[in-house]
Image (tube, rainbow, N blue to C red):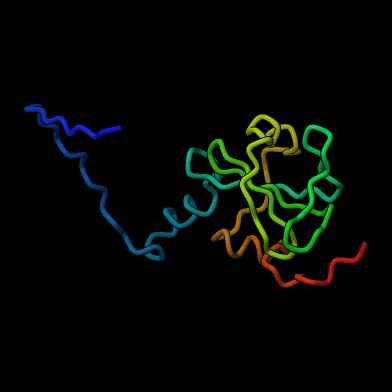
Length: 134
């Protein structure tokens, strides 16, 4: 496969840039940013799944610690990842976004400032590695 670059004589106007304000200057902008729903194409959503997870009848097992339950399912765009309490994570193509949406209970949840902060708050940051009890 060869990549072919094409040129055009069409020009586009750049989008007007919005003014960048420091985050703490305007309380209304800060309130708007804090209450904005975490949705859209760039949103990362997570849902806990405490029971065993079977895909096409085969139970899911963590390849690192051999855990069989207590998963965190992470959705970004079309992809869904499975994360174990030991911190191991993998892309699971068998789980579609529709399957993920069916597991989400409601439209509201807790919003964290970053993915790392959310993983730490939910206990999926690897702190519990090696203490899985059957």
